Image (cartoon, rainbow, N blue to C red):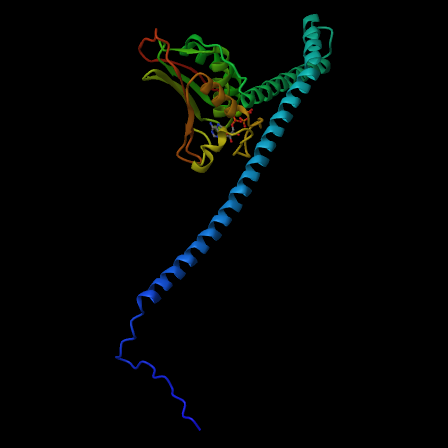
Length: 306
Ligand SMILES: Nc1ncnc2c1ncn2[C@@H]1O[C@H](COP(=O)(O)OP(=O)(O)OP(=O)(O)O)[C@@H](O)[C@H]1O
Ligand SMILES: [Mg+2]
């Protein structure tokens, strides 16, 4: 029987034979092929993800478009229904309410308040839809910041008194901006309404304004509920609301529209808060009017009844 030769295994201490140059080349080629295969797989995976992302983006754009169309339709339909109600109410008030008994007068008052709220909602829905389509226009004019701030302060005097929140104005009287007076009033009114809404009884709201280069920076400071850092940017998205416990629930469009209005003037808007319970400060900038001067600080206030 022939004797089988068993190949000798390399024993410890004996170095393995060195691979030949062609073996090394073959190994390198195999590595390169593996790498190319991994690369191809990663590329296919990435291409799959890119296509998923493109589909998700298309769906999102479609949903946003559908929402904008819905908002625009609701605004239009509400306006159509509301216009004759507002006109009839106006005629009723013009005719005088003396002939009505207290119950009927109360009913007219309730209808009036409801109509006012609905008109504001319709305005906000229409503005949001204009912002989305890029159709929101502003008509800038020379404007004294103290005047527009005073008007906004007057408009919130009653609700501030009712809420027990003190509202103060600290604005340089000579400060002037180039901005649309109605739109700036709308921005200030929303910021003040928000500040009062989220500030507990005994708290304070202050409107400050100062020059900042070519702009004027206006800030509404409050001592209220504050905002967590992670929520601060979200607030400027349409319908974003982060406080369940608001005194009066709005639509969540206010800040979105305010920022749109400010940006339409070439300004910026943001908010600062050290966190929940620490108060908040909403600020915006508007282009300074060339005739701007600086006079001493002017302090006036609208305070709570008590
Ligand atoms: N001063 C503030 N302090 C704390 N939270 C605020 C303040 N201002 C705004 N917020 C938060 O931002 C949210 C969005 O404000 P926004 O003005 O856009 O909507 P809204 O006041 O809820 O409704 P509306 O459309 O009537 O203005 C508020 O619901 C609240 O959660
Ligand atoms: Mg608001």
